[in-house]
Amino acid sequence: MAGYQKTLYILVVSVFITVFVMTTNNNFNAILKPAINRVSRRSADRFLLSNKDAPVKEEGEMLRSSENDALLPFSQSEEWHRHVNGCRTVKIGDAAHETFPAHKNSSVASHSNTKYFVDKLLTSRGHAKDVYGHRTVINNPLRSFSVVEPGGPNGCVERRRSTVVRTSRARGCHAAVNAGFFGSESGACMGNVVTDGKRIQDGGGIKNANFGIRKDGTIVVGYLSEMDVLREDNPFVQLVTGVIWLVRNGSVYVNESKAQDCAGLQEYGPMDKFVDVLSARVAVGHDVEGRVVLVQIDGNTEERGLSLWEFAEFLLSLGVVNAINLDGGGSVTFVLDGTVANYPADHCIGNRSWHCAREVSTILCAHDPDDVTSSCRVVNTHTCLKVAMLCVILRWILQ
Figure 1 (cartoon, rainbow, N blue to C red):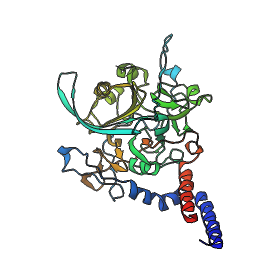
Figure 2 (figure 1 turned 60 degrees about the vertical axis):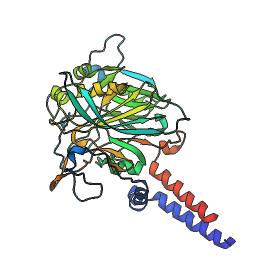
Figure 3 (figure 1 turned 135 degrees about the horizontal axis):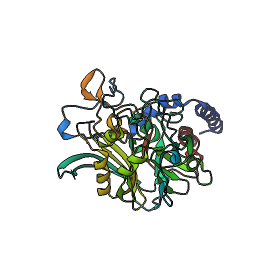
Figure 4 (figure 1 turned 180 degrees about the vertical axis):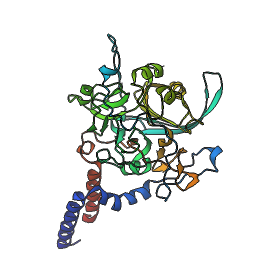
């Protein structure tokens, strides 16, 4: 390439980079994301064999979730301002949460591993029941695991709701599942939310179970005061709030957690009903090696699935040490490489012979390792991705 041509190309591309980086995320979604989607999508064939007659609509088709499978633990008026010290009796020497060192091993072959299971669970009454779902184990979670706002950055501030498919594709997740609870009408994210080092919101010391990872790689599970969340010397880099601490130090903790969570404010019904009902479920926890474990169970509220008691027992059988319960029921969506891989409970609006994934709040994402020293972890992932891709283009032009 002649010298003047190279100079002209550099000038044009430089202007293009400047304009492109300064554009909004909407422009990114319209121009760049469809290309990424076409590359990253793979077909998924893991639907329940017994439900072949009720297919699932893929992302981008016209039908939307009817949100008929409601499993809403909190009323829309609940402000989530329940303080740890105000809602539980803190015994001497009793820790409100557990800590555990996250897995760190750069020599592992894969960053995450997802398996579909069809298993048997022996209930408390001695009956065996089928359990269907997915388990993802994430190595080096400080670099390979993220809480992601609905639809990407500013999703909670703008009270957006988005399907797990859309949010996971934008973040580049290999495996993703719905996470935090949200206002069914307002769309507001509930509880604590920290994503990639950026504190989106804190719940003011809410009295519900949390799962997070601090900057030094410490996994934290359980109840957090506001000061715990706002701590600056070793801040959270990922944090999400659930309802009911399922497993604590290798033991079922449902009864204790149910007693500590403030009851009487559930939209679904009494806390006992929320805990006991059969439904689709999602949990996040960790194993004895400090690897983050995501577990998704298919179900349909009051018809099939697991109670939280059964869910906790099943998590123990998978080797989970600590785990909390996340949004369940019709919200449950598990996505592999940009495609729905589970069997959502909600029917589609206008065609009940199809099932559609619901628009939800935050998601949990297993992705390629991030550079934890990079500003991309704490500023704007989309902007960093734009710059990186355009720099590749510039290098190609200059060859």
